[in-house]
Image (tube, rainbow over all chains, first blue to last red; front, side, top):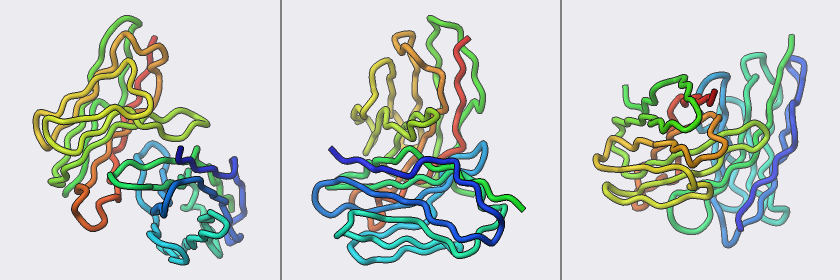
Amino acid sequence: GDSVTQMEGPVTLSEEAFLTINCTYTATGYPSLFWYVQYPGEGLQLLLKATKADDKGSNKGFEATYRKETTSFHLEKGSVQVSDSAVYFCALRAGGGNKLTFGTGTQLKVEL
Amino acid sequence: DGGITQSPKYLFRKEGQNVTLSCEQNLNHDAMYWYRQDPGQGLRLIYYSQIVNDFQKGDIAEGYSVSREKKESFPLTVTSAQKNPTAFYLCASSPGTQVSGANVLTFGAGSRLTVL
């Protein structure tokens, strides 16, 4: 079945450091890929998405490129801020319908 | 503002009791979903509904029930048959399968259920 694997957290960085959160997937066909972010005590918000190979999703300084050859969708940001502290979820949608399959989430802590 | 409202935010239940979590959306979305979130396990799909009066089981439906009598509402009942109900429950919605961008989910703020 479809699955998403994320790097385990927590990831702790100093402000202005470079961020990479790895995400790889297993799916049939050509899935759409997503990154969601969850701030403490809140629901999930869509951060960015990509719907086909080589697409790059970007938002708020975050980027992720859909790599079909490596079945990956790694999240990157060049300079993190304390306000980026949250849990980040990688997800995919494969086939028809609207169901999303989520990874286990990666907690990011950014310190001054 | 359009969005999804979940209530209550916190709920405590004694063993053997059924509880119902409310989810209301004013986004005019056709599809609605319930996910369960546990530490280290991410989000798991409980039930989803793509249209009024219809719903399907997700990956972990046992011990839960839902109804979809109105487009705006998708309540989740956690029954006494659910062996480990303590978790954070998230409701979501999306426009529908025929709409561009339909696979983008909008989430509510969640309800935390604790069984005493």
